[in-house]
Structure formats: C-alpha cells, structure tokens
Length: 79
Image (cartoon, rainbow, N blue to C red; front, side, top):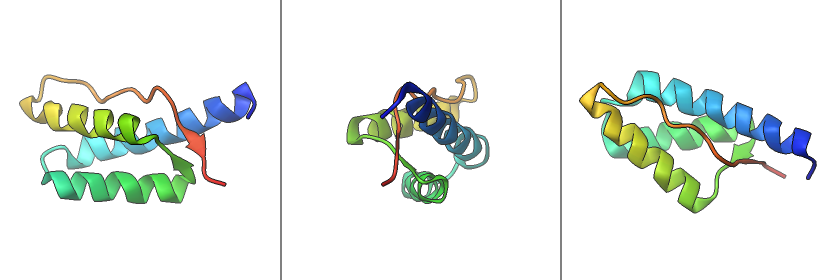
C-alpha cells in the first residue's frame, strides 16, 4: 500500500471520527460504536482493533465537553 493510499484512508477515517464525535459523543457507547462502524463502512476504510478501541475511548472521554475529537493514527482501505 502506498503512502498516498494510507493517507487517503486516514483522512477518510478522520472525517468519520469527526462526525461521530461532534454528533454522537453524548450517546450510549453502543450507539457511538455502531455509528463509527457504519461510517467507516460507508467510507470503505477500516481501523485495527486497537485503533478502534482507542478512538471509542477518546470519544467517550469527550463527555466532559473539554476534550477534542480523537485523531486517527492509522487506517486502511477496505479491500
């Protein structure tokens, strides 16, 4: 996978994370996870299990309304 493909996947995943973070952070954990998974599927990108867990934990941490949206560190296109 080229660096350009990796960067495009990260950017697509980040858009999903930003959207879920801004609209769903007060929702139940299961709803947030479902919305994240649905958005990633529509964007045709995937996160590793560890990356998904970290992002969901950071979105949950946003409930204090002082945290910023998590930053995606790695993602891959769905093949």
